[in-house]
Length: 266
Image 1 (cartoon, rainbow, N blue to C red):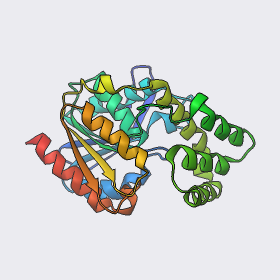
Image 2 (cartoon, rainbow, N blue to C red):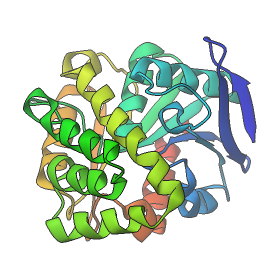
Image 3 (cartoon, rainbow, N blue to C red):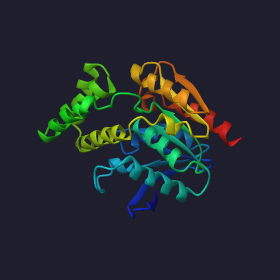
Image 4 (tube, helix red, strand yellow):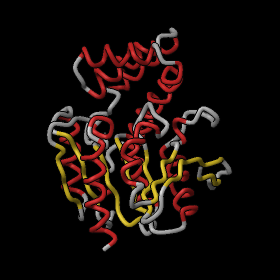
């Protein structure tokens, strides 16, 4: 474990494995870093891989967390690593990665961003946050599975049958049930950021934008917007994959990251 302290005094925790050039992974929603275990196992053959347990998803810290508070945990972890760090962010973790690059531009050698749901127009939670409101009503009624179905169907925009199965799976998992309110907090935190493309245009480090050709179309549109805004962006499409290629095709994801790290470390 990597354990350190953020600037506000809260404890930072991460899984720290392997040796070599350092990668700091910021996991997606409804997770604590475990979902990237298969990719990490492949990368640790030649890298030091640190998987941060994001503040937004910590049960032992006050909730909800702001993106700024999450960034402070990222920066504390990077300082503790003590060597040049490449960020790897997935979904909302990739939004936190972008904000970390803006906050501390000289800290990171670059970033790999896998389908960050950056706001490029209407809020992720819908006009007036109505999607988040309906999800919170379901949580208050003791139905976290229904709350996740609402989120998966209306925010992520996956098919209704996928949303139904996801909600059913979460309803049967005590660990995941506890994470559902944090997922809605995460969505609201990204909406509070608003459109940040102008800020991201100032990021002067190399960035790899990863996306699957089976992911919802709006995620590709967000990647397009980032590709136009970021001055040193490269785009890679994972063919036959969606938003969960880290689990479905970990070798493909690891290979893309390794190829990119080779260009950033010389």
